[in-house]
Image (cartoon, rainbow, N blue to C red; front, side, top):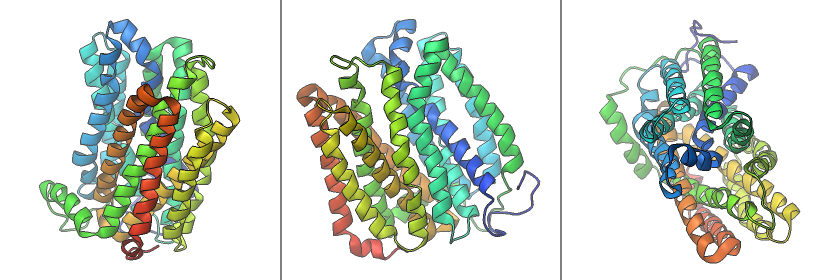
Length: 405
């Protein structure tokens, strides 16, 4: 197993990555991304303790996403310029401090500032994905990216459930204290397993790296297509997961946050199945994997729309939705990194900006539509985003063929 003193570098790979190392990357990514989503089932408790209005407490989520977006733009590109090992470990230690600040916050201002910092530092996830993709050999890149992405998905889907359980036991502050402890332990493990990352000569300046991101996406049609697909599929994904709590928390269901969080665990089945998408991309089938997954995404909204009538149908739809979204997501990342491995951090960071915009768009639209048209309106919205993604794929097949598929 590689460790901190290992002289193997990401520019001089020595065969396939050890499976244990890949799994540690996945665990690190999952624990890091979970920090963004813990707050969603805790907003009521936070608002009550700090005397913040329900409308204002939404700033916790907003500021976390703003911090995350800034990190994608200004921190992730550093992975192409400096030692990724140091960057990951530094972000990990700072995340521990931010989580402790949130857990011990005595005022709303400290809470909001801490959550913005948590979001900013959570982009270590994208540095991990780019690092894993660069360390992997070309023939295993899709599989490695798929495994690490599965860890991210598990972190996203399990965060709400874990937060609900911990909050029921020790209050909302316990969630962030436990996360800080786990993050510190994880940094200690990463010190041992992360190899050094030798930066090739002539990588340019930080400002040049930032400027190159939009240029890369505008000059490479495949990058832009995959970014637009990410925006649309995560708008659909966010539409569902943002609105789900609304019908389930009121009669006739009246589920607790913990029970609602269980639906996230159901989605893990689909997310885990999506790891195969990376292997298909490695074998040259990324284009058609994308098309099939987008069809499944559109179909998933039919059983999801039956929520008032059938919970089993909803569960089936959740599995299909998560399978489809993650299959496209894994394929997207595998394909874009294969285009320019030397710019993998910038490519992943730029791609995830589309992801963030889509997630924000879906969340904002879902709550607004639900207030006007209920769950049928939410289902129609999600299906619209899904259909748009399928149409983008169909109309850009020629551009997609320019990439290794």
